Length: 525
Image (cartoon, rainbow, N blue to C red):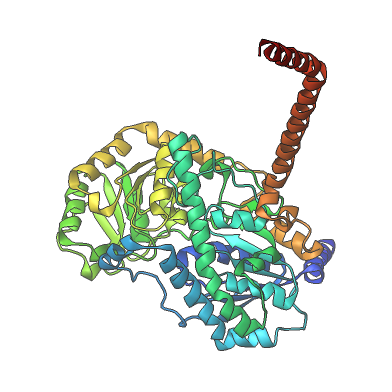
């Protein structure tokens, strides 16, 4: 027993001695993005590292080694507060609007007292060893790495952004890699490849153009002068990307771009006794329906809600679990086979043996959870990357898409539900994809922790040397131009020599003929 206690004491001591002090900076106020970052920072704290986390979502239950630097209340949280009318306004969404909402407004938080104090008086007892921040459209926060002169880790909550490829030196071959906002698969015809190239480059150029305005915040709060905001990307030592080859296709990745798709996945608390009983007794199956953490289903038009109700009645005795933020605002007439709650432990629900399908808006985290549990989907995308996410799963034959919320009718929804419920094809494909997604030597969380520790220990050793080359050097255009110039020059020299040889070999006879012809013409005169 004493030996066992000594062993555990050594383990704890080793964690404390070798632990790093890590700063997590996550100023984006989207809950769906935060779930990935939260699991990473909690995992690092449980590993024995001391983590300080700038967040809008302080922990409800504190854990050892984890300190919140809370900026809650500085921006309105987008949790259960997006209505149907607001979604309709997202139809005119642009890169400029995205860069302002998730970029410029986020950079303005650098004026928050806690962030200003962190910049002016970073802790020295001990100092930070590494910084982790999310990469989206607020590169102003990358200035923390240069300011503190320590390695920086960037997390990406979806597939690798097109505009990060050039910044990281990661190869982006648009012949078979669909752009982030493309619905194509990896087998594109000429037209699709052309549009893929144009769209990807256009969006990347827009993102860099609009985020370059953030230089004023970098100068104002950090006192750092850089000619372009993109220069700050070169300080990133490691990228942790929420993707996986089974979901996002085969892509070349440089050494410092690590796929950790599903990092946030973990078993939830069990459902409430009421929900558990409802699920257990649903022998004919259950459909789980939610539009995620932000959107309020109950705010949609009466006509649409009635379409849902009619469709759900038709599939009875199959039951439906529907997430509704405020049940009192829901249209009367809820069918008897439908249960509503303001929140469900999503993974626990999706894992239940009686769940048959998942009606979803197509959020990145929620769709990964469905694949994790092997549940087929019916997609009703609302905005952003949700159309692309759903189409990706349609291409993999694990989902049926209703295209958009404006295309939903009772007939289409009932048809999709019956296909999923009666044809085992979709469920079998979802379970096969789940196995592909989960079969790995190490969990996504442990993979992330290993590489964060690696960077903290060895510094900036994983970066691709490609980031030090101009774009035309990376694509070898200067080399190809030189080779072409050599070939053209050599051909010119060969032609010149051949012309000279021809004159030497045939020039005298030609001249003789011309001279004799001239003499004859004189005699005739």
